[in-house]
Length: 114
Image (cartoon, rainbow, N blue to C red; front, side, top):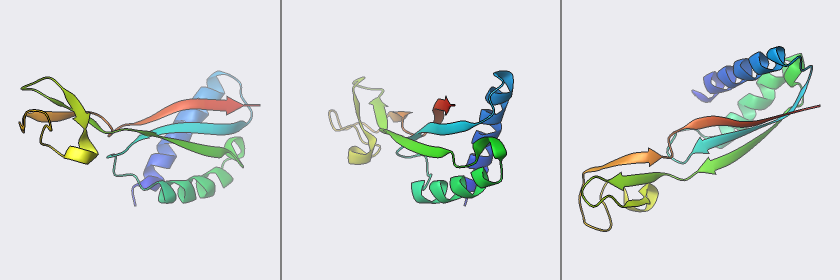
């Protein structure tokens, strides 16, 4: 389960931002998680609750997860398409010269404080 490591890194980043801005408590963190990031949201949520309970700054902090759609681009016809629906093959020209543009990332979008 790599979700716990992800949570530790997110909390570390939030703590750094809080320290720089003299924040004493964080109410909510909004994460953007790609559809093909290999993160299991239910595991992430469980790890979040446990880890936040160990940090005064983050105690009872809400986690909100937004999904980033997986989109690929075809190098042959330059069109973008849904990766989950079509995999590595471009639905427009049938080429397999494609690569993922979005959908594998994990971003902190928002930190809400008191």
